[in-house]
Image (cartoon, rainbow, N blue to C red):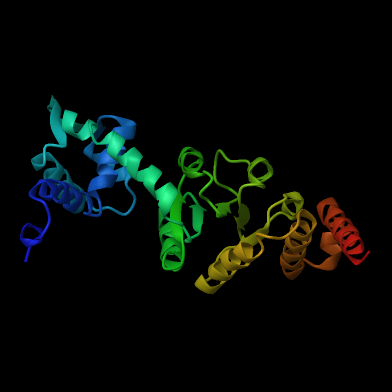
Length: 273
């Protein structure tokens, strides 16, 4: 049986056809990409849509062309270069997407937390995504432009490579502290100066799936902490990490370590009063 056999008004059949098209995984994403960025070449779309293959992108573009929602335009014959853009019918879908977004905001409660993974190596973020995506909505970024485009008020936890070019971890953590939790990802021998960065945790590469899951879960479980509690748990986690890497003598030579211990002592004293 098809929807045409169902006991619904005939005028609704066309709406169901549109919903069937938009229910295909990549179709609405391609439409929104063209809506927000204008004309795009094939490689631009391939780069801009994470995890889509060349074949699937080609098939999706063909489907949307057949539906009359996008058009293919030859920009150069030699070498051959084409661009894709929305047709008038495709542009007319913009208010439909806006209405759907308003409906979701009003009627659907979003319970899945969102994690932003930021690392210059796509293979690494893909590995992290596979670890986390069965429990969380995962967003990936591979440079500073992508990072700031994709960081918004949906993000609950950020796993940020401290060496990602174009991003000052200290400044980002200070600016985003009220919006999300941040764990910095560092190399094998992190600089003790990172103890002075007001992040919530530090992950040392390489780490395993269980560590990533525990880090995200721990941060989400602490969303109701007071400002002082948050600072204390973060300092305890960072102190534990650095004490597992460096000797006490080495750390005591670092001003950032001495400052962290002093701040931790002060917070523990305030909590006991």
